[in-house]
Image 1 (cartoon, rainbow, N blue to C red):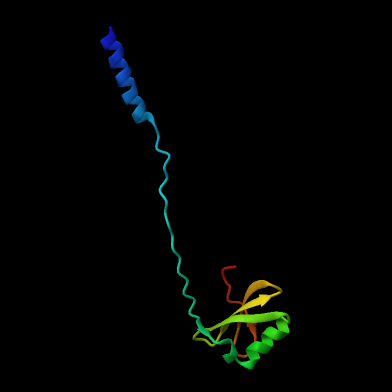
Image 2 (cartoon, one colour; image 1 turned 135 degrees about the vertical axis):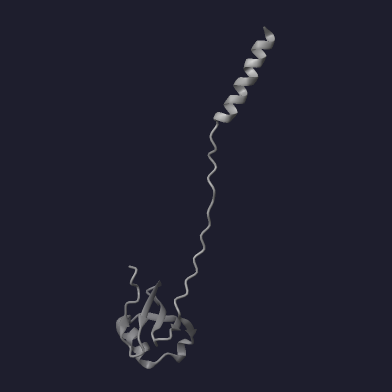
Length: 102
C-alpha cells in the first residue's frame, strides 16, 4: 500500500512540473541609427541669412550646433528660453519643415 501511495505521489509531482507555464519573455533589442544626411559645420561659418532668420523668428535663441546637408539646408539646434529646439533653414534664410513624419 505504501508503494502505491508513493508511486502516485511521484507521478503527480512529475505531471505538475509539465503543467507549469514559462513566464519568461525574451528581450528583443532594437537599435535605430538615423542618418539624415547632415554634417556638422561651425556655427561661426553660417551664412548671415541663416543667423538673421533665427534672430527674427527666435529672438532669445542661441545656436548650439549647426549642420548642413547636400541640398544646402541647415539643421540648427537652438536653446530657446532654456529649452532645446531643432529648426531647419535653407541657405536663403527661409524656415522649412523637414519633419514630414509628424
